[in-house]
Amino acid sequence: MITLDHLGDMRRTHSCGQLRLGDVGQTVTLMGWVARRRDFGPLTFFDLRDRDGITQVVFNEETAPRAHGRAKDVRGEYVIAIVGRVVRREPGQRNAKIETGEVEVHADEIYILNDARTLPFQLEVASSDGLASEDLRLKYRYLDLRRPQLQKNLRLRHQVVREIRRYMDEQGFTEIETPVLIKSTPEGARDYIVPSRLHRGGFYALPQSPQLFKQLCMIAGLDKYYQIARCFRDEDLRADRQPEFTQLDVELSFATLEQIYTLIEGLFASVFKVIDAQLPVPFPRLSYAEAMRRFGSDKPDLRFGMELQNLASALEGTMFPAFQTALAAGGEVKGIVVQGGAALPRKTLDELQEYVKRYGASALAWIKLADETSSSLLKALGQETVTRMAETAGAKPGDAVLIVAGKAKTVAASLGALRNEVARREKLIPENVYAPLWVTEFPMFEFHEDDGRYYAMHHPFTSPLDEDLPLLERATEGGETELLGRLRAKAYDPVINGVELASGSIRIHRRDVQRLIFKALGMTEDEARSRFGFFLDALEYGTPPHGGIAPGIDRLMMVLSGTDNIRDVIAFPKTASAADLMIDAPSEVDPRLLEELHIKIVKD
Ligand code: ASP
View 1 (cartoon, protein in one colour):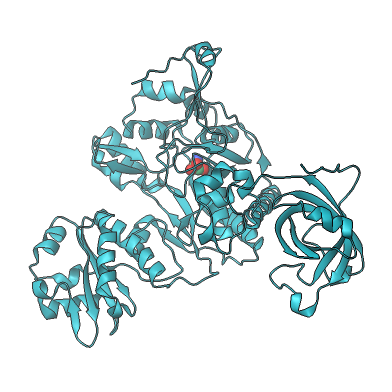
View 2 (cartoon, protein in one colour):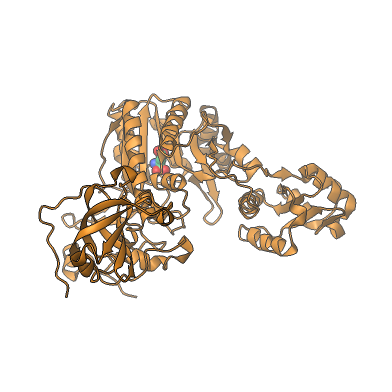
């Protein structure tokens, strides 16, 4: 058993990331964790770590025998304080990898403030490939958080949120808190529900977003609202989602689309300055239809080209069942040109074939323009048509064209994804470039084939374009339901490097329009009343035109920190299956609690 020392009134004079050549000769007190120790007989070296960095501490048996002796008892991750002198390192001993690498501290005294068990995994690894399994690290998240990279991400997050608050304040916005125990507001996902003890059989819902509250703030005349809001969505999880996440929720009255674009461009420009990046403003804009046509995606990555090319005109008069059936049924045949792609090996093409199948494509055809044109289509279409297709696509000698045919939706989804995949594999994405844009004029509704009805693409409070209002009336009052598919919304998403960073819209502020939207969604007046009666009432008391947006802070932080793992930017994240492995949640609760809530678990 080692004896532990008390902190007493000892104070740190410096952090472990602070000392430089200018401090040589000073006596300092440092505190932190022992990241690494090396013993060389009479000399013992510690790397002492705190949130600020690492300092090398040396214990010398000759000059400080007591401290050297005690240092022998110290293991990795023990918490210690040392008092010592800052010394310039010998030239050969300097360490350019750490900021304090020109100096070291020769310790005269050591205080062991706490010991530590052997960690369940190693914190120090040469590269992220060497990290222990993520599940293990999530179970001991407080240890994983000791890694400097995660600490850096969290500090950057703090700086970004501070900048957001500064900017929104400067723009005249008021930060307003809205409740977390609410009634469900639909954003297209499932609600997390919370049973009420005092109201038997009653449930609250956790907000999927503060959507209706922020709109009520506008009806209340608060004019410019924002909130760093925690939102909850019970969804089947994807890699870049978390069941609870944070967004900058914004709403403003009498707002035009242009005002919102300018506001948000300014916001992102300020926030990217935090990492010394310059965002080009104003952002270019693409309508949803154009983004889908040219990039096969409503969140195109504009850091590289490789746009989708329509090959239908090159196929006129040819008979190839796979293409003709697609075109005759109103579908498409499109391709992307991979520069230098004539060198793509067969194996890669096979892998890409499998890749597009994941997005519903039945096959991937290809043309290679090497000395001789080769193509998976040569037999079926002949040299002439294949050459015409390559020309239509704009391919040059040495390039390849990768082609998909089918329903427009499938072609967009598969080629859009393929475009990103090829860019990644072929290293076509420039580093340290940020390519923002607005995607605008989203469809109001999308048709779900499985249950044969329309759903709001953004949410049911989004306004249609003024010029599309007559279509809404014809669709809902005149029975021409299929027109709903043509309705465009005043909805917009800022996208950076292929990541959708926010969603927003101008809202419906008229009761009559809101009624038609609910009708279009197949909701009866009674259903609409029972779900949002309070909101429909409020719309009748002088609702100003208004609109808003909600940038996702976690996604934003992923882009700013350059990570593709959302858990790298959240202090205590959940797994992909919505579990917290550290606190073991969700978990069963005391049966007495359930009884009080009048809840019975039915075991199957
Ligand atoms: N409530 C929306 C969302 O969370 C954002 C908005 O329309 O402002 O996606």
